[in-house]
Length: 157
Image (cartoon, rainbow, N blue to C red):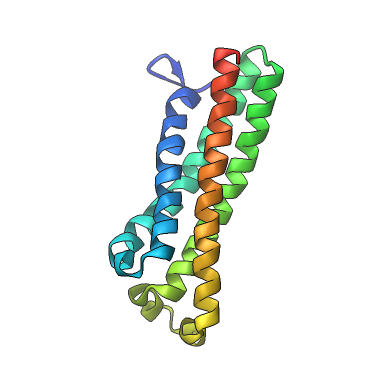
């Protein structure tokens, strides 16, 4: 089991996912809903969504090691299942955010000339903005559900 400063790595890494995940999800929702803020949110959202994929995967792997090292209860198994879902959600969130930014944010879109027709198609832009907001909302939801099941497994509730 990986430890950091004598503590299981999962216990420390989980804070990055629990904090950065909802911030990224909220950023995606605001990006989709408030066009004038897109210039300010595009780069942070791109970086956060990219960073969350390996952070979520490493956190889940550290959690699996912790699960094997300690006696597991039904709550721990539920938390592990929610963590597996969160790994998938983080990848889907990144893909949707990347597509949304590539099509709707001019500086990214200019570098991707092959997307020219898609960037000009208003329906595609709206679909990606709605998908980005929905992915952000679901990332927030899944972070809360996973975090709650983890807290319940630790505190026995």
